[in-house]
Length: 245
Image (cartoon, rainbow, N blue to C red; front, side):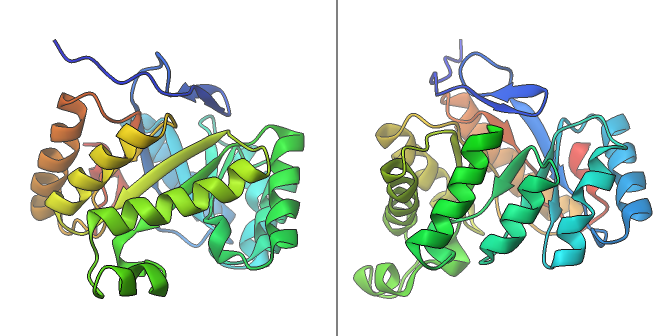
């Protein structure tokens, strides 16, 4: 019998991940978030296919300002994917986003991170730290002889986690995605031994339907079998509905 590690339970909109909550299935839109009609239509198709949490890219202020319009027309929790800009994160939060994905160490000054964290605290919005093997910090890469290693990915995750913990913020989920199964599995196992936060499983750049399905099935399946993981996303270069299948 599979025995899942019991992690911290966090709330994302109207569902929970971690603790004793079922493993939730996620996806991400591939429409322009500034195109509300197309984005909502795709999300509704994903809802029908079984998607429980949906993420949208927020690359600019137009996308951020449309979060509220999108959220008003869908039924599942909405997550904002933020890279580097604290202002986009804050706008998404003000628009009613249910969770943000951002790495505090990439935002810049402590003051900027605090603004985002304080906004999340006020609205009780969790943060997912998303570590990607292809974008590790230069000093961590140098420490590991310029190679992407599981140890380096875990070190990066812990660095970002500690930033939030120093600000007394612990509504956190974490992902550690590499483009190969071995490093991904090893990274999640190592981090699972060190922290109690819910883990978002996935293989980055998994590829086409066939290749991505095989890689994700092996990597995600292995981790779930050993009790690691609280929510999953299969990443494919295809219609997101295929990710649900």
